[in-house]
Image (cartoon, rainbow, N blue to C red; front, side):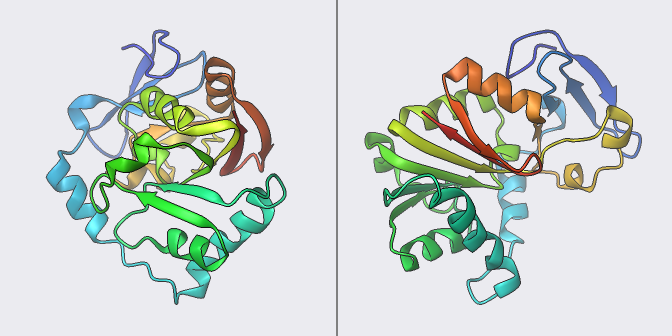
Length: 211
């Protein structure tokens, strides 16, 4: 297999719990679920429909306010935002509006507003989305084209911080719609390859790129 990020050859390994094969790139660290194990769009949509998030759940929304206060406001005063992959309940989009941002949102299943691809934004947020990307290099490249020069791409996804053996036990991969797993080397490769600058990261699950 060829790595979907850096196009180098990968090594395959089997999930010891399920009949699923993954590809691991030793160059950029990216892991992807092999295509024969991907669910179809109907099954994927059914899984997303199980999500039951709402803006009144303060435990759930706390991370969104932290994302704004710790990773957006310290970097820019701009207010035009695209929330990419907003899901069945666009809670973060609603919070952005409440916080004074001029926000739009897009989701391929729930809010397929293709007009967003004709605009450019100062800030793009993508929260718990990039792990669902079937073609991550294409998607990251597309997000870059939607950013204004000097704009910020704010990503939240759990970084793979463990080796392959421990990856087999990682709860994050058990979601059948999670197909792409990044570590810090992967993010560094994406930054260098796409011409981003990494301006902030917590080395755990949040990274901010600047165009």
